[in-house]
Length: 250
Image (cartoon, rainbow, N blue to C red; front, side, top):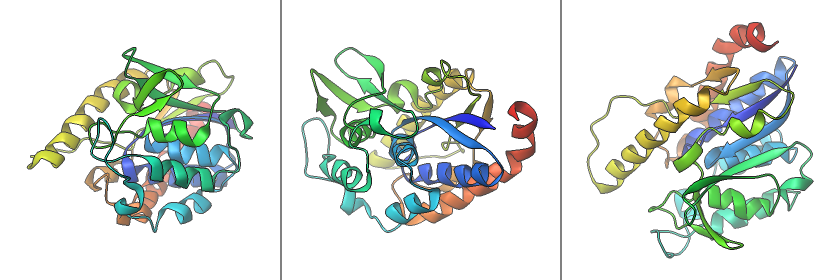
């Protein structure tokens, strides 16, 4: 049973994608293609590079925000050079087109005001660009354009997978619980999550099946100490959805 995965962004919540991937692999599914935005692009690239879900959790679980936040940059509080460096050291494939599993990374083109889907190019740089949650992180210059978080325009990129002959599983790790935010940073993140939730609904229409780990809503997207908890939320969500998924696309 081969299928494509469209992985949403969501900071540390993206670890839930790996729990879902583990359940899929343990139940006879083969991951034939992946697309991702932001955190979904980071873990998606590592999956397509041939890493196991457990390998990726091991890479990510001991990280702290100070390990990832670079020097202040133009257009954001922090640069992304450390995220790019982490991906470079973790990936065997320098370019997206060299990965064993087809991979697409979604970025927002700030110059054109549109989403761009990259199926080739430098994997580490484009995954970092897809994770640039402006204004917290600075946008990334690539070729002749300026790229920002893919989630701004398409946080669960199902569309680029429709050209492939596999069912598409959309995974959104950003359920929106009721909340009354306080403070500039928390309020900014809340607004960004609400904005991204709107485009998730549009992208979900292109998915053959959809999973949303509800427990991820209680995890702060920057709390890297919760990586393993997010992974466990993915396990639970996938196990609860497994029968429906098999009926739908098996």
